[in-house]
Image 1 (cartoon, rainbow, N blue to C red):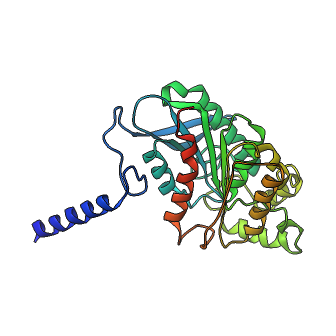
Image 2 (tube, rainbow, N blue to C red; image 1 turned 120 degrees about the vertical axis):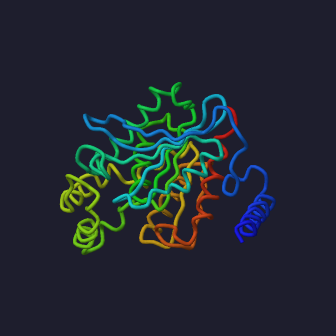
Image 3 (cartoon, rainbow, N blue to C red; image 1 turned 90 degrees about the vertical axis):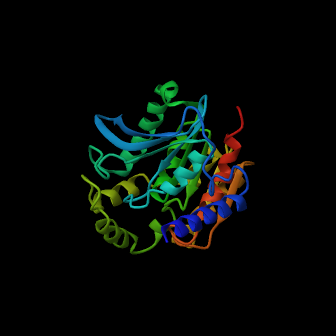
Length: 289
């Protein structure tokens, strides 16, 4: 019986491999590489605290394009499937937790998320040779609050090669709606468990006080000349994200990719579609600079 099951698994594996096109990073592992791909546990300094994360290092010789992936609030969805697929496609990928999130030291705040992402980019640039990072092909991608942070940081750092915003949690329109503060406070309070040093009231005050400075529609002209990916879903941020894409077009952005997927905010019903969208967009960074 075990032999027959083993043969069945082998046949299914062979069939899947034969059906997938060569080099398909969603369906196939890469051929053996030297040096081999590996996973590194990371402890990255940021403003006197340590940020914990993981670095998925791509296999093969030379420096690799590198993707920094930013999780949302409060970070339950890590998008590790996207990270692994990007590594199979030849990218280094860094996933990390902001200060005060999921065991990282310090206190959580939205301003700290921005500072921590800047610290991570500086860390990668300072250790580019050790980590095989091509600093000319550093790309930011974020989901929800992570997408908001990615857009803010990319607007301040012209050396970021491209920015992907997946259901970015821009709140410009929502903040104008009566009752927004009470709704948001209740949502924040329900998700503070993995976060340390933050309060719902404090986060709302941050959003209000930085409303103009952190508005991605306002910041869009800063990244319009670079490759930009805006992915939307059937969630409360769709109108905001459509406005971001339109702002890029209005600013003359000729490297915009805008994609809508019919699924929820976590892309629960479209993980492969999301992965394909991100990989297709990342392909432009794979060629030799």
